[in-house]
Image 1 (cartoon, rainbow, N blue to C red):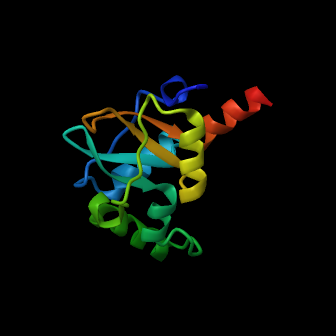
Image 2 (tube, rainbow, N blue to C red; image 1 turned 60 degrees about the vertical axis):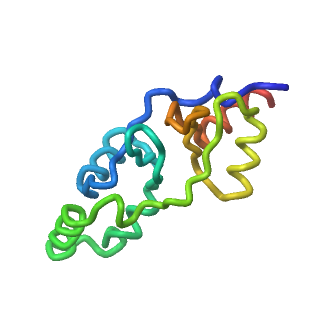
Length: 139
């Protein structure tokens, strides 16, 4: 059957809430160097926010001037996770083969999949880096 998702997933997942503002999110993404953060409500996944989603919601691509930095700070403070998160979240179970998770990620162009148990509770996350690490071990 091969390796399962539970063998490679990250178990201590930093999560967000829909009512978090992007200022808090930006701090998590920068500090922890994460590119994907699941959004939960009472432990169940309701969305996911990527670094790319955050960039789309801000003026980060503009030339950094005092005006754009001030605008960026205001946007980060006044925009909430629920406004920019993706709600069409594809998940994976811990007992699924890594191969199935990798295929789902490739087909859907996802950089990460939240890992949920049978009741839908978040138990981990599997990322592109996890898959590449496994592939490099095999190769």
